[in-house]
Image (cartoon, rainbow, N blue to C red; front, side, top):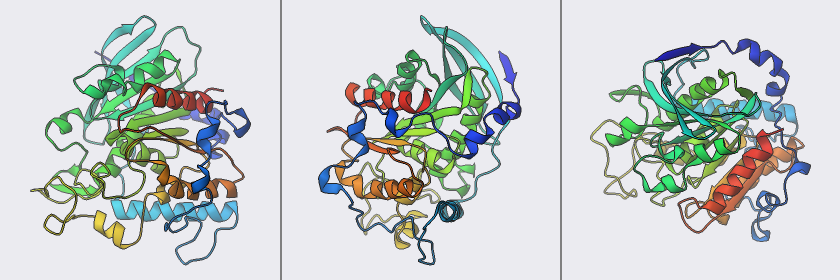
Length: 383
């Protein structure tokens, strides 16, 4: 067992200006032809904004007109969501990471089994994949799911065949860190409960985002990694996790959300009401099913609905960082009205081609949809 402990403060200084300005590597004119179709809504959804309240309106109803206005509005949105969901504990910006063992996953890819604190009191074990014989510093991607093994093509889940994001991206030259809630999922609790499941101060989905932010610091501390070029990807449960992490923690340079349900809905897989997401309540938990009068939702979720809030407000926090919705059965082209609000925010910032959605028929990722996701990361994380 080995331990590495790196101060990343000095490495941040070199990139401070880029980070402060949210500069990303890909620009509008650099989009490959294979990606361009996904950055525009179908004609039926152009300039359609649905019933969502515009993020470009302050709480008092006044209009956001300038980039300076947006900076204030952005803080207003984030502060309100964090107040509603519960404030994170202090982030672990100087991580101590144990390397439990190392192996050659396949020729040219080194895999470290690592352990680190992802909350102030709880450790996790992840898989850190490093491509050998590749110039440093390199871009990196954090992958999130029910377990770390699926993203490297291992584990028992059937989805490992097309949720193997980490190994596929490492083959393309990215450093990747795969994390997951393996122990909690085995208990049927799935998420993180801070400070304990008996006294929860932060909604579990937001606490997962906090853990992802701490994992960002683990990647950023690696000498092989360029800290300004770290993205995040997840599918379904992991898609929700990746969405909240990238929206709430602005050091993720870009993100891919695979069919999480990007707005509130009553579809069974868009289940933000569950106690391991935004509907935490003390056990015994409500029956795992779509809400009904006999089986109502509890916790924060009904309050969010009553206030007219929806996830498009969080999407807007990404601007001008790019994101791709890899949509399936839960996120169809009909979701574009929500995404159009993020496009409008980017327009205010003078940015184009920052919001994309690709669609497939079914929930599970396909080889074709993953290819678009990997090209997206190559476009925006590789200089």
